[in-house]
Length: 63
Image (cartoon, rainbow, N blue to C red):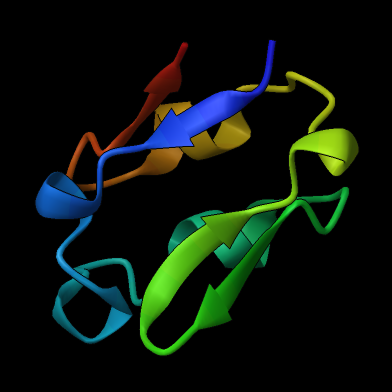
C-alpha cells in the first residue's frame, strides 16, 4: 500500500527541518520535489516505510 503525504503537515520542502529527507532516502525514487512540494509516484513505492519513519513533520503515512 503506497504512502500518502499530508501537504498541510509537510509544509513544503523549504520549511522542512529535514530539508526533504523523505526524497533523499527513498531508494525507489518514488518521491520527488515539484514546486516545493513532495510528490509521490505510487507505482514506484515499495512500502519500505523509510519515509514514514524519518519524516520530521509526521506528514507521511499509510492510506
